[in-house]
Each structure stands twice: as C-alpha cells, then as structure tokens.
Image (cartoon, rainbow, N blue to C red):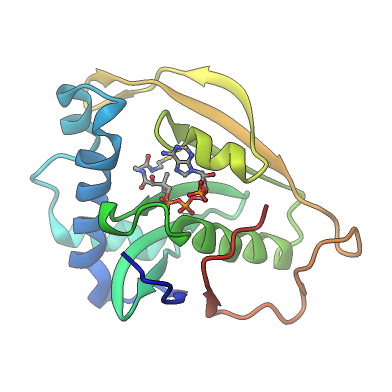
Length: 185
Ligand SMILES: CC(C)(COP(=O)(O)OP(=O)(O)OC[C@H]1O[C@@H](n2cnc3c(N)ncnc32)[C@H](O)[C@@H]1OP(=O)(O)O)[C@@H](O)C(=O)NCCC(=O)NCCS
C-alpha cells in the first residue's frame, strides 16, 4: 500500500520491462479474476509472453509508468487517436489512486495533442474506474483473444476545451508528474 506516498508518473524505460510485465500478470490474475473465467484470464495474460516482445510493444506504445516509493506499480498508454490501450495497476497498490494518476497524465498528453475525446475498451473490472473518470459506455463488446471470447466495453470521454474550466495547462504540462491520493472527480 502507498501509506500516503506520492505517485510519480514518468516515461517508459527499457529497464521497466520485467516489472511492468509482472504488474500486468498480477493485475489480470489477481484483480480481474473475480470478473473473468480462468480460461479467459489465461488468454488475456498467458504465462509464456516473451519479455523482448513485451518490451517492444510497450516502447512502441509510448508507455508511461507509475512508481510508488521507487517501485513500479502501474503503467498505461495512449495512442495518437486518443485511445487508452493499456491501464494496469499492481493489486498491492489497488485503490490508492495509481490508475487515476496515470489517467491524469494521459489526459494531459491528449490536451497537448489537441484531442477532443478519449476512448478505451474497458474490462468489466475497469468499468467502474472509467465511469468514475467521466467515460460513458458506447457499446458492449465480445472480442476474441487467443481463441477465447471475453466481454469488454467501448467507452468514450469528451475532453474539455482549453479555457473551458479545465485545470490542465496545455502548454506547460510536465512529462513527469506527481500525484498524491487526489483523484480528478
Ligand atoms: C482498473 C484498474 C487499473 C484501477 O486501478 P486503481 O489504481 O486501483 O484505481 P484508482 O485507485 O485510481 O481508483 C479511482 C476510483 O475509481 C473507482 N474504482 C476503481 N476500481 C474500482 C472497483 N474495482 N470497483 C469500483 N470502483 C472502482 C473508485 O471510484 C476509485 O476511487 P476510490 O478508491 O476512492 O473509491 C485496476 O483495478 C486494474 O489494474 N484492474 C485489472 C486490469 C484491468 O482490468 N485493466 C484495465 C484494462 S481495460
């Protein structure tokens, strides 16, 4: 748990490969296990993912990483069109604002790029998190991953235009951000 420590969000480094893959596996097989069958979890996060492939995909996706007290506890990414592709938090740091800090960072990126909207495909597990952050469900989906069908939800969130009351400074938003337990509500 964070014990009130600040979440630091920073850019991916190749040295983060092992830690982020571990977070991914633990988030899926730990936090999401209440919402999906063992077969679905195994298709989502198989045990035999090669580290080099994982690192290549995270680098390509311009991943950002969240640290608590110097330990990697989460990661996420935003594609050029504003789609939040990955958002995963270690179960040991769940519900301490880590994903909120990551999303805040991704929202700042989106503002800097002039995007009007964010989208995601939220798992059943992540649905309440995204709803809490202003996303709305567009449709329920049933994608097939490694031959196994599993439910998720297409969601969208409109972004406030600069000067619309948004508190993000689009010109000066930092590449490295610190967030406490505060959540943009
Ligand atoms: C979804 C996930 C990233 C959320 O991470 P997190 O760091 O625990 O989220 P936060 O602490 O920032 O949560 C902020 C708020 O979102 C809401 N929320 C988050 N998880 C929730 C849950 N399981 N149930 C209900 N509300 C939830 C709450 O309002 C929470 O505030 P609160 O804790 O003060 O009540 C994490 O649960 C996870 O990794 N899940 C498994 C993997 C996954 O499904 N990833 C998404 C793929 S699309």
